[in-house]
Length: 228
Ligand SMILES: [Zn+2]
Ligand SMILES: [Zn+2]
Image (cartoon, rainbow, N blue to C red; front, top):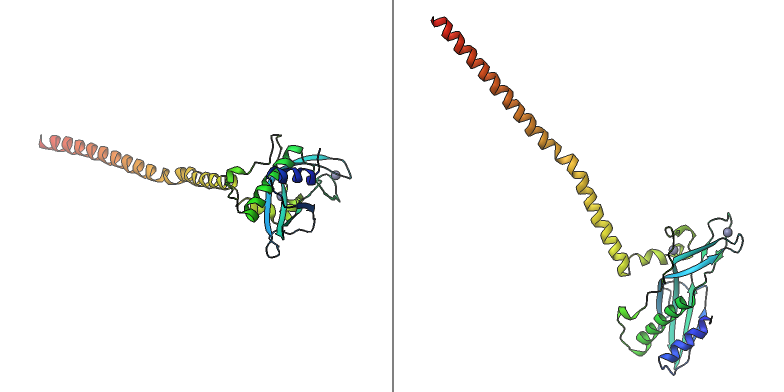
């Protein structure tokens, strides 16, 4: 399996970029903290595997975020990369653990990065559909554990809920569901009262009209007998 740098070099060469580009990891990189002329790309929802260095517990996350800051100056390009870590949920005093990615995930991540480089520094127009999904098959059980995710603690994960289409759709469905819930609850509270009142009104009418009938019959009988 190739390193990030090896795969990145191949991806750059594939695009016939003759200018040198280098890639380095930097764990101090901050989201939106950029020097002038630098560009940012956040790859969200990469599938990574973690192993705790203390208890050796293993887990997968489909929400690993990778932050890239890139810059081109005098015919040379550089990229700083930060992979957000997660902590083990089984250890009382866990350390931040770095994820491992499959070759395919790394390829997709760097494919997207190179497209962003072409867009920002070489004026190439990129359609959103050109970017590859980074989560690759392998199902991940359970919800995302924000308390144990470095990205969440630094505000990277929460941002992702607003940006990509998938999450926006999720939010929309959530809202419609809420509205439907309200409707569902509205039925038992609103409808029974009019139903009940008409029912009560109808039975009232019934009782009073039958009482009137009985009274009329009684009056008729009384009048009939008093005449005789
Ligand atoms: Zn552990
Ligand atoms: Zn997170």
